[in-house]
Structures are given as structure tokens and as C-alpha cells.
Image 1 (cartoon, one colour):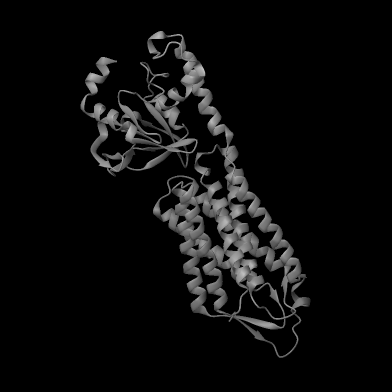
Image 2 (tube, rainbow, N blue to C red; image 1 turned 180 degrees about the vertical axis):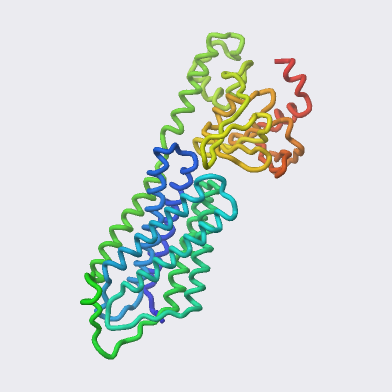
Length: 407
């Protein structure tokens, strides 16, 4: 039973697991909205960072343990433990990133990932080489498996929820603590029994690496994880540049029509921020003809659903989630593109991240500074309404005919 771990290395192991979880799940969250060519790169990157985070956490924890003098690490089991981790993480992310993330699919992926994490741990443990025999308590082995599976389920749920910002940080912290908890629970049930005679394990099982070599490898991987985490925090300038260009283009389009200008002498650049917040189909006519169907992604390709069946549209990074009254499906359009394609007489932008179908709204309730609306369907759901949009939503619900005629 291991006691007397180095507290600084224990804290470092938890931090590495958190950084790896944040970077890996942050990359994985973009999988469902990425074309096939980029999905492979993102899947490999997400699986790689998660696996590196989990594996590095494990071996930092091993360096924190008071191992007997002369202990070294067999290279083959150590490498195999890392490959196991990469493989199961990649398969789990792939399963939940294609098709509908049903509960059986998520649970089975969580079990696979949990078993993989535990397998990585125990294969890595049996890579220890020295004059001792390794024994494990069955109770702690089962408990570590349950913790690993729970951590995997929580991490996959965080990935599917498309969380960002503070929510992603909290999820990564929970994931890192859970994975570390699994490791130290398993270590608590591990016993190194000294052998009465010198072991020939070095000769029998091949190449070994000292703790100093492992420390160098772990240090390098910690640097990789930290670099990936910092790069993931760098904002993508294209996300701001594209809307800005679209707003300026819109301003130029309407500048030739004096009927739509509130200030005829207003510069085009000054109009851009105002037009960015306005519906693309506003100012009289929609910029594109209303689309009768919306493309949504499925496991076997792109499907199309009628606009009449759409309840709401939710922004999801560069893409959107379309709710048809039963479930959400990923759409390749951005929130601005969806607003431009939908009929403005039937849909209203209720929030910077949400569009709602007027005729499917069944409830409006004030909440805080804004409100929430409920939309009908087999699975009714609610979306927020910003304070700036409350007056428009109320007008659209009670005076649709008057609004259409007055335009």
C-alpha cells in the first residue's frame, strides 16, 4: 500500500489531468460541426491530448509514489499502456461524435473509456521492474473502475453539451479530479511485496528506463499539454472578422436605398455594428429566399427537415443545433445563415444565440431581466429571450398580422 506521496507531484498530476481534459474536450466539441477532412485531424488531436493528459497524470503520480530503490520501468508495457489510452479515447469520442448521441451509445462509450483508463493504469503498473512482486486488492480495483467510468461519462456529457468558457473549465476540473481519484484509489490498493531472492525480470522482459528518463519524458509531455492548452485559449480572428465583413457588406447594399437609412449621411462603417445586431432578413426584405428545408447531419449523411417542423435554432460555435420538437440535430449553417434562410414572418431572433418559430411558442414567462419561451413538440423545450428582444417577441406573438401589413 502506497503512503507518503510527494504532495507537490500529486498536485501536478491533478493539474495535468485538468489541462489535458480541457484541451481534449475543447477540441472534441468541434467534431460534430467539422467537415470530414477536418474531423480526422480534430479527432486525432482530441484523442491525443486526452490520452497524453491521462497517461502523463498516471506517471506523474507514479513519480510521486515512494517506490523502492532501484525501481525502473519496462519500456514495452509503458508504451503499450499509452497506446491503449489513445485507442480507447479515440474510439469513444468517435462513437459519440457520429449520429445521434443516444443514452446507450454514451453509456457504452463511457464504459469503454473507463475500462481503457483502468487498463492503461494496471498495464503501466506492471511495467514497474524491481525486486518485488505487485499485488492488487480486488475491492480497490473495482472501485477504481467505477470512478474511471463515472469520469468518462461526465467528460463525454460535457463534450456533448458543447460547453465553453467557465462551464468547460468546471467540467475539466471535475474530470481531472475524477481521473486522478481513480489513479490514487487503485494505488491505495496496490502492494509491492519484496522478493527473498533477486529478480531476473530485467533480463526476461526486455528494455528498461530509469526514473530519471521517465521524468524527462513526463516533463516533455507536460510541456506539450500546457502548450496545447494555451493555444486552445487563443481566439480565432476569423470568428470576428467574418461577421464584421458581413455587416459592412450589408451596409453597402442598403446605402443606395435611402428608404432604409435612418441617417442618410451616416458612414457605411458606422452602420455596420447596428446592422450586425439586426436580423439579416430585416429592413424590409430577406437577403435570401426563405428555405423550405434545412440540412441536418446524420450518421449516414446529410438529411433535410421541413422549416415548418423547426421549433428553434441554437448557435453552436460556427454551426447551429436545430430542434424539431423531438431532439436537436447539427446544421452546417451558422446562426446568421439560418436567420437569413428562414422566413422572417415565421421565425424571430429571440436571443443572440437563439431563433424561435412563432407558431410553436406555447409559453412566455419573465425570468430575470429577460424571459423564457417554451416551444411545443413531443419533447417541449425552452429557450431564453434577451431583454432587448422581449418587446419584439411580445409584439410578434400578439400582432403578427399588423406587423406584416405595416412592413
